[in-house]
Image 1 (cartoon, helix red, strand yellow):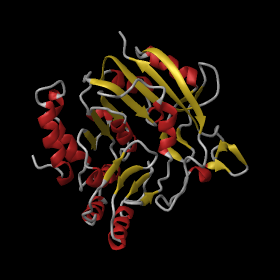
Image 2: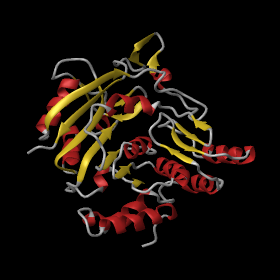
Image 3: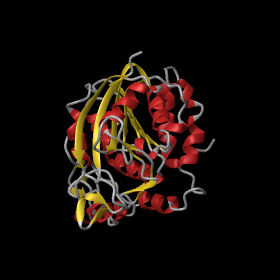
Length: 330
């Protein structure tokens, strides 16, 4: 089977890494999923994004930066090459997760994703030596932070092809082994694949009509004793409080259920997780999610009630996000 050119190297590396190990069952099904996820017939913008990738200049990297807010690389480049780099990366607009810095070029993304990482890093089990799955990883910003935290292998999955190609642009210069971002959803993975030490699901749960099914699927990817890190939109209220916005929230589509932190904790326990902890609850602000020169569309400030920032434009409570951790203990 012919694979998308951007993913052929990933396939070869994964086949070599996984054929003799616990992920061998995923190998056979992976090519079909990769082809579907980066199909030009399904996604008409892929040729344009591939053209942007082809314009990335060859530059010499001096140092990789994974453990700082701006993930990226350093190196001395000519002004003309820096301009070519910026033009190519802007061809992959909009940049949602980040920030990144390549050769002094600051890719100022919509989200200050480093703030989320700062909130969870000290609350999770150390990632050193762990195999990690990041579900709904976007362009892989947090995957790089996981690798920087010592994970032995990081697999990110996301069904949005633009984010995959943004990751490939970054990997062109970061170029490190043990990190892969694949174009697929959780549902495209084998249902029973209990091989990951840590599984992250951040910003996904409220996009699922059946949150318990999502949690069960996440549990089925964890080895016994493995840890889930769950981040989701929440509302105030007791352990029964639930907001069902009927598919639309803060002008975001496909949003179905926003639990209270206590209800999210109950869902995790109902799905079979143990030692469930709520480690952070933070209101999302326009300083954390905003329009920038690298994401010029509307952002959070445009999605809030102009007369009352405690409400969304639809009249729902403004976004608050909780981070919970849980263990897969029988």
